[in-house]
Length: 446
Ligand SMILES: *Cc1c(COP(=O)(O)O)cnc(C)c1O
Ligand SMILES: [Zn+2]
Image (cartoon, rainbow, N blue to C red; front, top):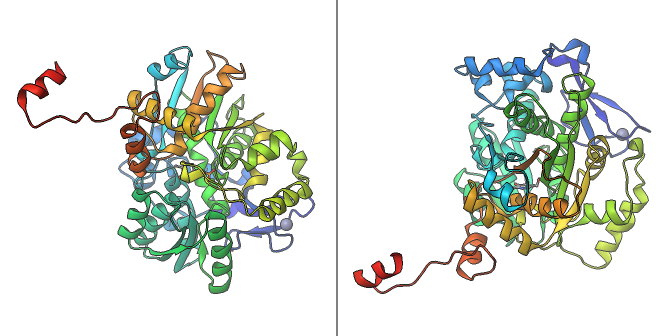
């Protein structure tokens, strides 16, 4: 019953509601973020999460094959005939004993959720399948996004899969080559702005309003609905039990917001009895969330967020001409659009936030590559952050932890090659130069 869904402004002082047939992306009354909401009494949600697992048996049906739409009753905003899928969400949760031991954890405690296994190589596909389904439902014909890279790759892939014209905005020189190559290859009109992500974000919102394009940034509440399913799959992989901790990198804060909403709803529906704690990890060169939460004491406060703290903070960034910088380009963002929803997630999940250096990110990335399936730099912020949380005793050695590895190792080969070739860290594994001579080669390997 997709008509049990509606949109609602997250600001409790406003609380304006809109039907899902509108593509507005911000509350027209107060300018705050919108949520997708459900009249749960009118949705046929199973009474046990394990019921969703039965759909593995009918995966010859396109919606049951999708790791997002397998859970469709929990994001029931769109009739099945409009749902777009390209087989997203076939991702795995790997128990990684080697990294657990390296971090001094109990060997079976650490799990890595590989979202790089999605069709475009990042978790963004979870959100795009949902947002494009909404776009089809409202009859959109062209769309746009601002991107640090993976959003544009995913948007470009889904846009041509369902026949939408697509324009992506990226900051000049701010994008990893794997991602740029995808946007071009998948046929998106690719616009490079002389600026950073935050500049692109401002421009794309203006362009979408002016030209009536469908906006695919994580301001789009339907994208976040799709991203909730990453949590459902982690729970599924743990035998329908929630872990103790979810660790996720924080950029525009769409993922962390979606995860908080997922757990809030599961708890309200009585489908889980315990909400995991959430750790959100910034890079030190793009640590707005960490600064606002840990130093400026910004909190959700039942939705009555102290907007002055945010305004002052951003005014100061502007006055200093601050531009974020980190090798983890996917989280190189200083004005995260989902900030308030993320504060709600921190509230729901008793969350913590912290920042890690680029050096820590690169070492963690190499560790994940050496003992796991690899990931891009932003994803490795999770393991780098977990190391700090273990050292502080915030996370216990035997806590069950799931780190969300958001993007594929091949997204950003430059960072990887530089780390190894230039011996930048403790796991550097540089190629060895050798003459074209059999005896020399054998001597090296023996
Ligand atoms: C987009 C992205 C992030 C940041 O996620 P947010 O939801 O914007 O916080 C992190 N890692 C990768 C690989 C990404 O593509
Ligand atoms: Zn409002």
